[in-house]
Image (cartoon, rainbow, N blue to C red; front, side, top):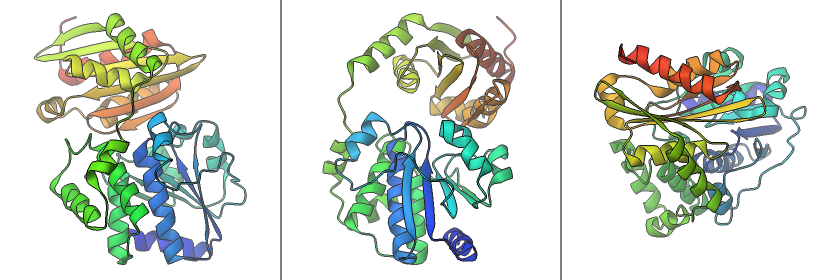
Length: 332
């Protein structure tokens, strides 16, 4: 059992302080997984101090969730005092921004728990890497830990895990049978599904709406074989803009943005694109893009992201080049 391996690392280190780290702009799956995992650790090892931190804070939706789940976040974690570091829903340390170097230089064992494809660079420095791409979310993996240890779920933990799973499956649109079983069991633990799902419905901010509209206005449309690929750029809300382009009709959407030297790229695709082409956005596109731009990239088959150093124009051209080669598309 994977959770037993984690406990073994904790016991071998005789850990007193465990630091749980989430990626920048942490989404509901990340913070809810961290919260539930922290509660699990406290039940198994009551003497251990567990802290949760998110690089550069959490997303707007996650902030809303904080009003409904008693999650306490540490703004400036003490890496030197941490006996063990755990990355949740974060498969590359680059997603920790300024904390990446602190993780690298830390002597504490590093544990990674994620449902994205594991990144080779992270694997090199990790003591233990639990990556399960078959899981719908990191919350689903954490729920499995509770079951493996036969630890009773509290109502808050069940609610948090439900929210994380619902968010990452787009309200169960891309859920598997194992996901539905987990969700049903969470409801049995007292989660009011209708009430919980309403928490995930956050009114869109004006700035996000504007970013989506700008991405639509700026997009370049490429017809490659049977696929429509949309390339665009905005300075913020790249992920939201990419989702919007998919909703408009693109099979693949790539939205880049830059602030100073920092480059961020969000990639989205319809499930049909992955099923018919076998192109995994995280592994086949985001990962090489991250390496090319001296950063890191990764993610799911149909949703991925890249952080690096570069400019928008070069990023979009490079991304299209990778997609074109993968699709064996020869026309310009």
